[in-house]
Image (tube, rainbow, N blue to C red; front, top):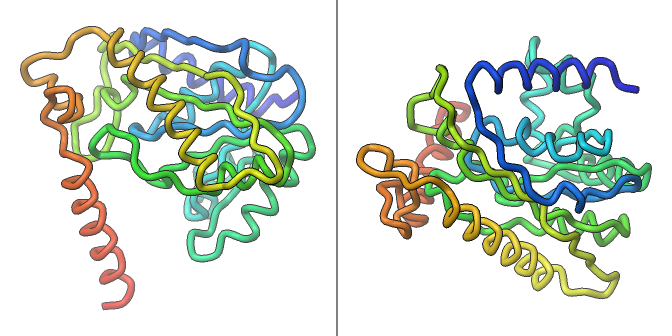
Amino acid sequence: MEPFYRSVIGAARTLFFAQGTKFTIVGEENVPRVGGAVMAINHTSYLDFMYAGLPPRKHGRYVRFMAKKSIFVHPVSGPMMRGMRHIPVDRASGGQAFKDAIRALKDGEIVGVFPEATMSRSFELRDFKPGAVKMAQVAGVPILPTTIWGGHRVWTKDLPKNRGFGRIPVFITVGEPIVVGRRDDVAAATERVKAAMQAQLDVQQAAYPPLTGDDRRWLPARLGGTAPTLEEAEAQDQADMRRTRDKFTG
């Protein structure tokens, strides 16, 4: 029993109810009842970790998310993250986070990972880092390809939050587990996971209520939306990184 984590999820569900969020969850049966798994999740919203944690709850399971270390030292979020046994990641040196994740996986935990490493301003899948596949390979556990569509309309980078009763549809899909063999090529397996997640996103986007007018800002340029292209979004991300670097070195 995890009373603190359970209470946080209860608070999140209350928030979703207040917002009128309309969830469509597919693939809950793909979450293993017991044993470790790496949940690989696309990233377009600040609330993705809350959304991705919902499907495993059908089987009474919790997800240990990997998140940047700065969240763990914050006076408010830090105690919460530690209380839910999430895993801090030092982006300058991720070795300890990798070891902690492997230990959690071998202990039978589900570990949540965002393979894109940062939020996608284009709402397209960015290049994937190989860490999720490496962890699954070393720990001998499956990967759960998990995609979320619609959450970015609640809260994402650069665009206004939807704080009110928006009744925004949010689609969450957990795909069939992907097994990575001990001798499998990590780069090829990473592309396999990305392809599976892209296929899921394509289905979600095709089924999502049409977005027109100003709401086209929530659509990728590829689908006729006004979101930045992958290249434009990458340029914005690089500019952010330069500003952060200048802030600490200037």
